[in-house]
Image (tube, rainbow, N blue to C red):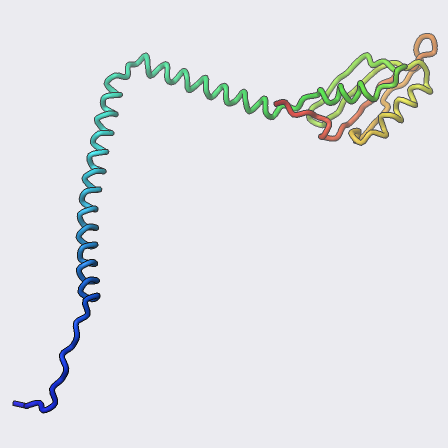
Length: 178
């Protein structure tokens, strides 16, 4: 048996270590208790949801189901129609352009529009060939016109100039339909 001559001082126990230990144990207990409470709450919510779904299914008749299908079908049709309207390009910009850039002594008698390549085919009549040339120059100077081709030209009654012109427009002339 060994006898110690030099006494060792007692180890000091710190209160904050004890406090931290008890606080950690308390948090662990609260966490475990919360887990079981929340698990029970979720199970009860699922049970209530199943009961409500069963109750709705009992009250749902074949008439109601067919009406729901019909309403969903109409909703799809409305959505499709909305998509078509939003994608539609209006030619109102072309008419505004022609109205503001038409020579006063030129009359257009035929108009056809090809949306795929933004092409407008016009046929009309001018008082004479000089006015027709002026009209073509007016149209060529506009930035909205990508390409302009005189397709037909002939002399009409009383010296008028009958013509056909093909105009290919830039995309910015088309007004989106809102």
